[in-house]
Image (tube, rainbow, N blue to C red; front, side, top):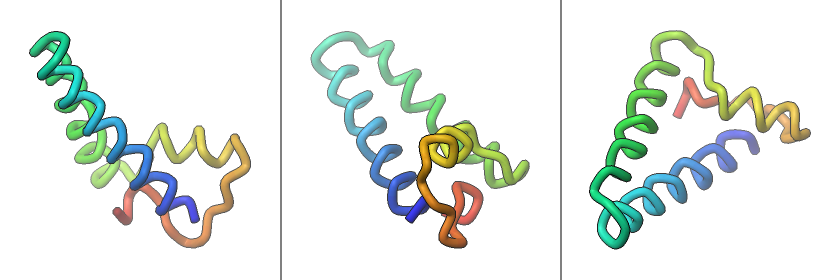
Length: 69
């Protein structure tokens, strides 16, 4: 379940940052870069801030995590 929430939230954030970069300011593309860097970082460190937040909000870990995306 955690994996599903993670994918939906990250997908929404990427799409939102692209829309904001087109219609508001190109500087919003840095938010997309930030998301990508965090995904790469979580692959190496096995730690993901979004996963920590979702678990604290009560989302159950069903074997999936940010590191396995």
